Length: 341
Image (cartoon, rainbow, N blue to C red):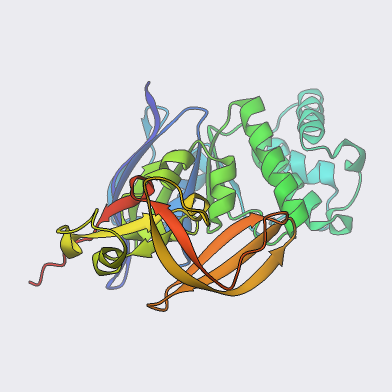
């Protein structure tokens, strides 16, 4: 399959601080890619470089077979949705969505048809004549999305567009955004620091750490096969053990030394002895109710905390017990070697 967006060796520094470090990746047409990472990892800066809002010191950007790194933002044919909407408060919903089309001098009939098609897609047809300051946060973000799509860009960039919304509205917009993306077969690159959000809406997730992409995988692969300690600890609630800890409980990993870290996903931990598992003595410290989930916090004799989530109807357990792990369920991750220069 031909790459639709290609980025090669993109680097950017602010003064002596390296923000992006020789980043390279490809995106396919119609793909939904999420840039995921903690604050300061460079994900929003990378998005701004693609849009032309930041100028990298080196690197090549190609979109739909055309080099765009020297083009100004307005000539890149890219849509951008910001976190804080960037709408015109004195305009109606219709006027906001049609703004870019008027600037391109589109005829009125074609413009009206396109705007109302988009308003129907984002479920705002009845609000066409409403001024945007009267809308809720979720509705404003729908307007921003429709406005960005109105000019039919080749690719749509979204910089944490849902982070300012409350949880219920955010979850609904996640579903709606994915539906719209599939409906239009639109190539989208989405930025977030929310792991659950990234896993829910993406075809692939690119995890960034300190200006580098450390893993680019499907959500399933990212969760089940992390390639570094950073990814294993950033995605989900994996519990980490070193070799010395495990050597107290099982001989399976004897001799492997400190070259690796060992992770287990919490849903694979059992409170019942199962053939082939090894046991870890723990003490139950407290129980937290999270809606339909109960979170049990255990502590090992080394003071390590282990959280196990179960449905509310799970049986009660005594304060002192064992947890059981199948060694084959553990994820073995190489520890990066530090080279002293």
